[in-house]
Length: 150
Image (cartoon, rainbow, N blue to C red; front, side, top):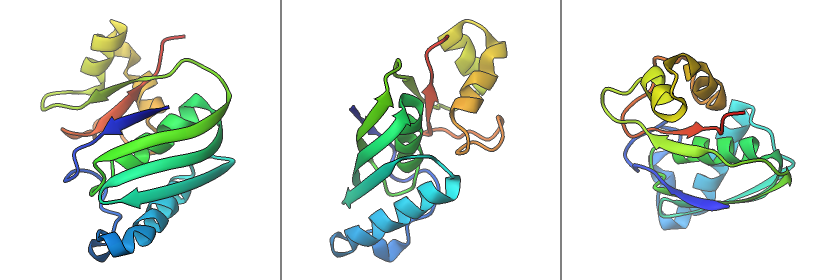
């Protein structure tokens, strides 16, 4: 699939500080896996490898959206600077674009940019659940999925 870059110092704080050392890469991978389970993201099988802020995802999911959500969820974790998503997808569909939130952004403003309609913010909100719990709670540096219009 692709490799996405993230701001390492921003995001969910789920990785324990002692896990972020080379000798504890397996612990970081375990914490990321538990986070995916906690969010309820779906997959057929998954393998997460973490080395010094770089994460590689392998496994299989049913849809492109599921693969992208897993990649974005992991990337928006503090301590992760890149995610190489090698997940296999059962059902092929168009890939999403990605948007890095900047100061002053809102989901409406982002929807206007990508869809030409600020009222389509709910498409972006839904595409980023469960990582987003509220459309008003986005932060600069966060990476969001922008699915193709249907």
